[in-house]
Amino acid sequence: MVNLILQTAYLGDLLLSIPLMREFRKLYPDHKLILGCRAGFEEPFLAAGLVDEVISVNKTNSPSVRAFRKKLLKYEYDVVLSPHESMRSGLLVQSLKANKKVGFKKWWNAWIFDSRVERPMQRPDALRQLQLLAPLNSNWNEILGEVSVLNITDNNTVGPWPSGSVPTWSQMRIDHLLPEFQSAHAGATFLSPGSVWPTKRWGFNKFVELGKRLSEEGRQIIVTGGRDERALCESVQKQIPGALLWAGEKSLLESLQEFRFGSLMVTNDSGAMHMAACVGLPVVSVFGPTTLSLGYRPWQEQAIVVQKDLSCRPCGRHGSKKCPIGTHDCMKQISVDSVLDAAKTLSH
Image (tube, rainbow, N blue to C red; front, side):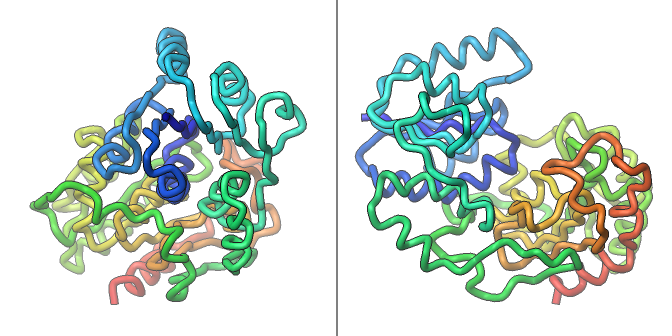
């Protein structure tokens, strides 16, 4: 029989689904598990054996969307899980043949899912997604009830997290599952200055200054990002003596393999933060418009979130193109010194 996880959100959301994939497979060890996700994200999930097949989609391309739906419709599923809450995903789930469909409860989706669960917003997102297993396992609410991890509401700098704050069974690390790999850049420090949302970017000049100061300590700096972030990454890299540029040259799997052997990642609240958590790379993440109360913390213990306690935060779930009040103080007030101090803390 075949099961499906439909998660076509951003990379960070997909990576936070890893604990769900792992526990879902444990419940149905003899079922084939298919993942439906965005194009370009497929390789690590197959390489780590988290799923058996990936069906991917370019959501901005109509022929790709039609082909995605057609491929999904080829199967008759036992269980479909949909951690993605969009109406478009819901309508796609509605069109699929399945014995059981499970999703988060929304005002509009009672006719789509056989079982709807309340999304526990007080918990980090990796644990929220695991709540989808409650209708499939009578003990699951009890298991989650024993976990005391809740979202942090402190808007000042937080971390590293105490040992045991990420329950072992809920971790998203997959480095031990990936193929053997030898890196020529072991010990490198990675800077990831990009983000889909402009207000979530700490800033070009600050990443340059940070990179220079870390380089002066003898660190190999690698500026990394996606293909669409290449111009920004290259601009930063050119200003840091001896820095390397990886922005679009490496696949998602290749990047994760390299990150396994790094010493540190400094990033915004972005997919790179969650990539670091997947392979146990210590991470300093700069939070501006978003806060830890939203639930999207780096899901590992060797992490520090640098942030400022401002009354205007958070100004949205994802950030935005422009600061709603025109100041962008949430990022402007975060100094290079504060991020450098966090980097040194994780390096000890």
